[in-house]
Length: 209
Image (tube, rainbow, N blue to C red; front, side):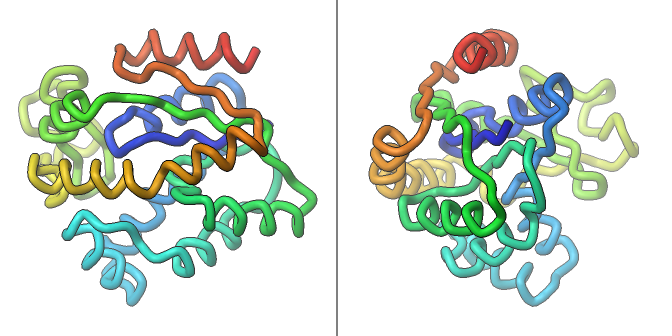
């Protein structure tokens, strides 16, 4: 089974992808994780990506298309963070066709702007191992310290309220054509992602069962 999880930054698609991969034996392909890893390594790609992320802007299509083509190697995956617009969707269809693959479900995780701002402004991450936390919903055992590697947690530069709102606007403007694309061409499913992790996960399972 091949699935696209789509939603605004902070919609919880990354968390849901992890749960689905564990319980459905799927491979998680997170564009954000791949790009952040490049930023951490300060590769040529990473430096280019970092300049866009700090401004709350999306990384250009030609850059992410190459990354996705190299990453998808077979069936049974969840795509998190790609595609983000109808042009990328068409590129993805071409990539999959070349590999003899297809998307079984496009799952749109609908969430409000207020929820997004609250979630992301309270998010903390480990700069060493990449583990993620939330000041209310997913606290580390020791305040400010990663459970996995005991590194001090940080707030990402793009997780301040002003940048979050800019990211929301960019997302809203750029996603309309993509949602129409999959409504017309794919197995489109919309779930209410304003709730807690378990409620959202259970709704996803019910819709794809």
